[in-house]
Length: 505
Ligand code: GLU
Image (cartoon, rainbow, N blue to C red; front, side, top):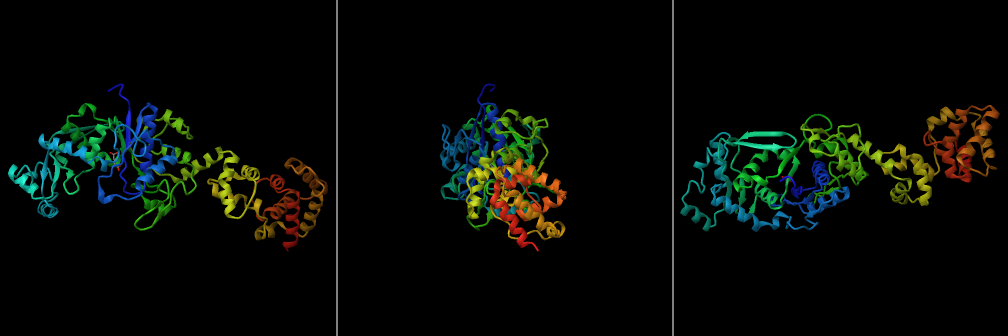
C-alpha cells in the first residue's frame, strides 16, 4: 500500500449546476493528489435517472476546466478504467450484486411503497433492518420457490444490504480521526433496483472506487453518514485491504448565522454560489456564476482553498502550484468554514492588481466597444494603470475611468457650490493660456509649470486644483490631475476647461 500510486476521484452526480462547495471538494482532491504525484479521475455518478439534469455534466467539465482543475482520466478525459459514466457500467454492477446475494450479504425485497408506508404508520421510527426484516416480504422470509416465482412473474424488487446488528463499524477519517458507530443504527440500504436495472449510489460508488483503484475518498461532510455503510460494503466484498482512506471536508456555512451555505443565501446577499452562470433547463431561471460576475479563476481558487484549510502561516495569496506544495489534509478543519464572500472580492482585487495593464486592457476593451468607444490598447492600458487599484472587478474600471473616454457634460452640483467661486472662471482661462504653449505635456512637466504659476500668483492651491478637476472630470474624483491631462492631451484638456467655464454658472 505504501508505494501505491495515489488515485482520487471527483464523483459528482449530474443533478444540476456544480455548487461552489462541490468545486471546493474537487479542488482539495486535486491539490492532495498533485502534491503526491497522483492521478485525478472524473467519474459521473448518474444512476439516479429521476434526478438527471441535461447539461449538468458539460457544465461541471466546463467549470473545472475554467478553474484550472485538471483531470488525468475520466469522462471526457479518457483512461484505462472506463467507462467513467456510471450509466454505462450497468453490466459491471450486476455481477457484484449477484456476488452479495449468493454470499448472504444482501437479499431481495419485494415490499411495495404502499406496504412500506403501512409499516411506517404501524411501527414508530420504522427502519428496515435486522429487527424488522423478518416481518417483511423478502427472500429471507419467503421460500426460494416463492422468491423465484415473484421475480419470473415480473414483480419489481430491490436488493438490500444485510447489515449484521451490534457490530462496531470504524471509519478512519483523515480529518476527523476514528469515527465509531454501532451497526444497529444503520438500515438495510437499497443497493439495486429492478425497476431500472441500476444500482444505487452506494453500491456503484464502492464498486467503482474499488475497480478504479481509488486510494483516497475526499468528499463533503454530508457523505460522512454514508461512510459506515461503505465500510461494511468493503467488508462484504472482502476488499478491506484495498479500502480507500476517507477524508470528509467541513461544510461551507452561511456568511451570516448558522447552517449550510445555500443558493438562497447567495440570492439574498448578492453573490454567486455557482462557478458559472446556469440556466435551469426546465424553468429557464438563471443563476449567476463567478465567471460571469467577473471573478478571475485564480482568485476563486485561492479564495476556496482557504475555506476549510489553512497553511499554518500568514500567507494568503497562493498560486495553484504554491497551493499544491502547501496543501495537506491534516491542516483541514473539522468545523465548518464561514463563506466570507467579501474576502472573495478582496482576492479578486489582489489578482487583478497582479495582471499587467495590457492584459487588463484586453479584458476591458469589450466593455468599451459596447459603449461605442474605440481607443488603442496602449492608451487603455495607460488609463487602467492609473485606476486599477480602485477596483475589484474589470467591469468596475468603467466607473473609475469613463471621464478619460467621454468629456463631462454636467458638473457635480455640490462641488460647484463649494469650489466654483467668483474668481474661478478667470483663473481657469488663465490656466488655459498657461497650458497652450507647453510642448512637453508629461505629468512632471505640467505639474511644475502649474505649481509655479499658482505660487507666483499667490492663488490658493486647493481652490485651483479642485476647479481644475471639476472641469476635466466633472466630479471630485479620479487619479492625479497631471496624469489625467497627460493622457487626455493638451487640446482636449483645454477644450474641457473652456467648456466648463462656458457651462458652469
Ligand atoms: N455522487 C456523489 C456526489 O454527488 C459522490 C459522493 C462521493 O464522493 O462519494 O457528491
